[in-house]
Length: 314
Image (tube, rainbow, N blue to C red):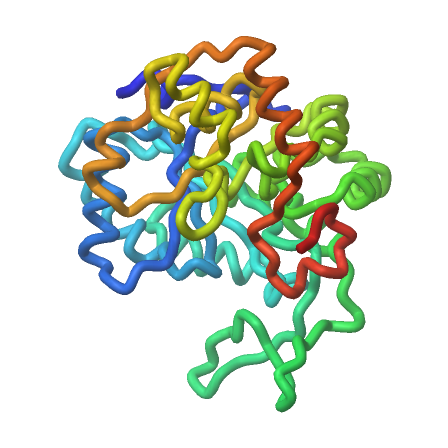
C-alpha cells in the first residue's frame, strides 16, 4: 500500500475513514471497470470505495468485491464502503439502500449519504424502475412540492439504527442546511461530501464543518473532464519542489487539511501506483487555498444544484 492510502481520520462515530478513497464513475465496459476496482483494492491497497445508486456502478463493484473477499485475504471489514441516496428516493431511502446492498452484495455500508438536498417526484419507467431525473414533456425537472431534505436525513438516521449503515452523512449541503438539520435533529452528520479543490477551497464551509466535527469529503478533486486542476501553476510548482506529481500534490493538499479526497480513475496502471505521501507545509497549504480564493471555479454544475445557494456557480 502506498503511504497516502494508509492515512485515516476519525468520524464522529469513532470509526476510522481513509483520507483517500476510490471515486467511481459509470463505465460502458463492466469488465474494464471491474479490473480497475480490483487493481485499486488488491494491488494498490485502497481501503475506501465511494459509489452511489445513481452512478450505476454498484452491480459491477458488488461482483468484484464478492470475488475479492473470496479469493484474497481482504475481508469485508477491511474496505470502507460509501453509497448514497438519490433525490428520487427522498421519501423512501429504505428502498434505495435495499437496492444498493443487494447490488453491492454486502449487509451494510460504512457510510450512507444523502446525495443532494433536493426532492424529485417519484416516477417509474415501463419496467417499474425508478427514474433518476424525472422531467415533464418540456424537459423541466419534476420536483416534489411536498419534499423536504430534512425528512430524508431523518429517515437515514433510522436506517443507521437498523444497522444498514455504520454512519450517516450528507452531500452538497450548505452551511445553512447543515445548521438546520443539526438544530432540528440534534444529530451531527458524520460527513459532508462536496466539490472541493484548489480552485474551490470553500474556506467558510471548512471552518464550519471543523467546528462541528463534520469530516469534509471532496469529489472531483482534480476538476472535471481533463483534470484541469493538475495544471494550476501553484500545483505544478509544488510538484517540482517535492519531486512529485501534480495529482499527488492535490491529494496531499486534502490530507494536510484532514479532508477525504475521492479521485476517480479507471486506468489500471494509474491506480496500481497509488499516491505518495508528501508532507506539505502550512505555507504550501495556504498558498493552494489562497489560489482558490482568488481564482474560484466550480466544475460540477448540475441544474438541480442551482437553487442551493452555492458560491461561484458558473
